[in-house]
Length: 420
Image 1 (cartoon, rainbow, N blue to C red):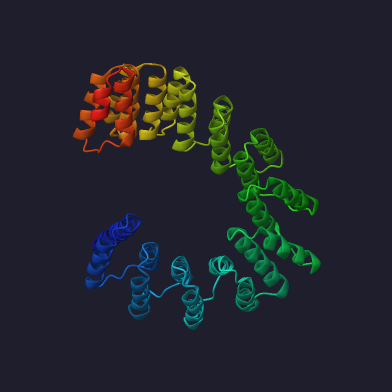
Image 2 (cartoon, one colour):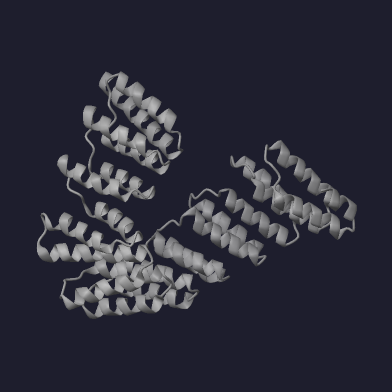
């Protein structure tokens, strides 16, 4: 029983440390770590990796270095993920030389760099225009323990990815052309890197070109390939083509995932095609896939912008029936739908529902209501809402005051508007 209690205590404490790291409360996280060590319990390497990651993100590289040295002294020993995090930290502060030194430290500790290590360093070197150094580094790392063909493929794939991330599309294509000249073996991963690179640079013609080349050479696209194409097409506003790729995906026996549907639904809603977006949401439900909150919210917001209150609330009800809790954004979308239809009383009543569900209205909530009240000439009600903002402890922003000024101007009360 005592052992079980100790294990439970340990689990709770490490969870707290991880949560504190995510919240940026590093002082409290290190205090709890110290207390655990004083009791003879050293947190595992995963916990220490969370601490190193949080320190690097906050820019405190010196303390991250101290922590890793302490890990080497008293444990737990750093692993590849620890070093990758620290290497990325140095790259974030533009100290690539120190990052490269860490590769030697890894070797001294008996840890082999992996693809993640290579990706981080190559991206940093390519950003500095040091492609030659990146190639040399990859050759040194990958030649040890890999056959020549595998090493060449991995090297080329990482370099192409690094060039795309640093915006050097011409160099990325040059590496690909060189792979062809040397008859370097290729795989789905390198094609995905190319398709993703051109998709992110909003050059879908080239993305399609490599997609077709991939098919001609007998490679089967995976969900990542299709998601990349769908995302690129949605960004270019080519929604019919994105929907077509979704159909091709299904025809090839590749099951769309949450990302596939979220990308299409978001693209359709942004371009005002909420009915089609809702069809995709229903398709997910038919496949026993419960959409994330953001997908429901996009469709509710889409119907609201068209003033379609019935469908907006119907989607909200369906959302709840599938166990997805509405959030503040959901309610703000419903409030927007109500005020768009001129129903300010019904819009305000939604705040009560929010409170019953444990949610607090935010500044967007009140700015929507104040704007509607001012547009309808209900200045007194707008000021009542203003007082509510203060009671919640919020600071009225420029949008709040702009709405009130607009309300006074619409009523011809320029003196009151100027006073604000």
